[in-house]
Image 1 (spheres, one colour):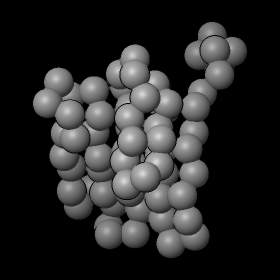
Image 2 (image 1 turned 60 degrees about the vertical axis):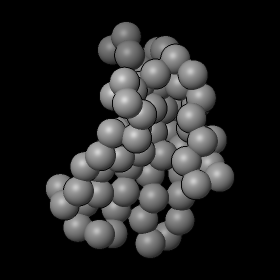
Image 3 (image 1 turned 180 degrees about the horizontal axis):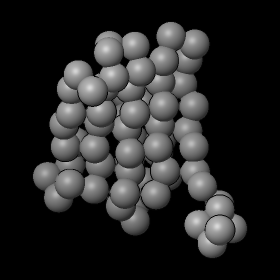
Length: 65
């Protein structure tokens, strides 16, 4: 981990950078968040690397395993 920042004052949106090549923006809140023109739904993470961007939203079933 090479960088970390809270993007919202209440701590519900956090950005973590790994080695300058991988960035994860986690939205732990109950409202959507827009980061650099990309919408991140509640309880989801935006993952960005050299290949592009993707948003991952876990399903309710995944949390019950």
